[in-house]
Image 1 (cartoon, helix red, strand yellow):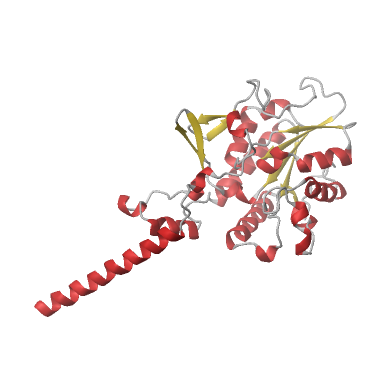
Image 2 (cartoon, rainbow, N blue to C red):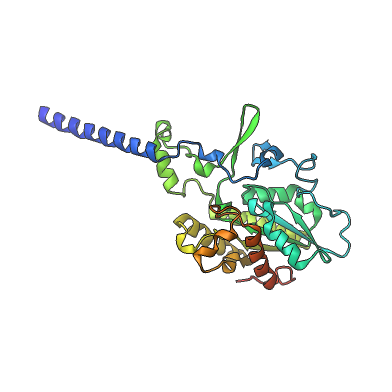
Length: 315
């Protein structure tokens, strides 16, 4: 009996030692800074937001800041008088907000026949984009709504927390979700396991699909046209990780199932790896296009007749 207990004790001791070593390795591999604080947001944008319990954060609309009464960035157009121009509203996250593709389209199409309204918000996902449209953008009754759909639109809605009188934004996809046991949720091993996977902290594709379907319904409710730009990661596809490939695959599947008019901007990108840096806003930033990158994509969209009245999907 003593021999059996001794063997059990040695096995348990071995397990404890192994878990301790694994925990130390996981702690070493985890980023020491809170990754939720490193959202890709333009400087000064945080001051334009307020805390929202349902949506994490939301832009301050019509309060004299960056966003006017219809939830769009300031421009010289009159909301109550479009004349004979076609009103085009661009919605989305930071790619839309920074406006490089929009500026390219403005140069290519000109402003004689079109208005260009920008309702992009840094780090928004489709749930937040939908709610901004529902609350504010739809009052413009745009003729054409163009959504730039980004890979990170599958991330969970960012969480806003008040710290020292300021609103701090955290991306839940970089935070551990609730663990089966409270103690487990505090371990580095569990946090690392979450970061290596994605199923626990990405939004379900069907949730994103419902958002897009509702945006389409709201746009068509007032006779508008809805188009989606599928924005790629700005690097050769052989360098995409599995999560990036999966999000693209899910996005294309959703657009096909909803029969949405869409434009795949991956087709606008060069074949040579050496040409990618000039398309990026910053050399290492694979999420945001430079003005040159915006023009490359703008020309692709111009040639694909983005602003035509066709409702067919662009493949």
